Image (cartoon, one colour):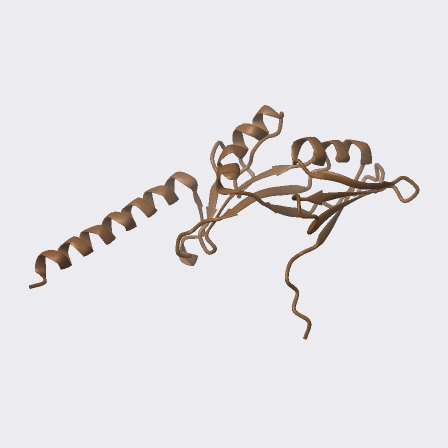
Length: 170
């Protein structure tokens, strides 16, 4: 068996290649690597290490459109800043259910914090950061504030248990 170590590239179809290049370069912050006009395609580096790439392929203005989902790993601080950043860029930050949001959601089974948004072609994009907590698969997808309250309660419970053990041990 050959072990896949990471995802190297993902490809999306777009209606207008130049609009898509601008969006992914100027809003998402990817670095334009190569444009091939004869194939109506562009390639952008994800991150500075040239370890991952996004390919954009012009599909024209056909009435049928396929929308896909792509997630970009970012820092926790960037996930937290994403709603304001996106809103300032004229883009609606979304929660897991596609509703406008001002805070990330937490995918508790990982756990990871995430903010979603759409590109000009309707593709669902995600900024995601793993969290340092234990997975809670039964908790589903939670609003950020609910996750914070749960983590505070768990820490308080843990501190009470330690305090109780210290007081009851000889």
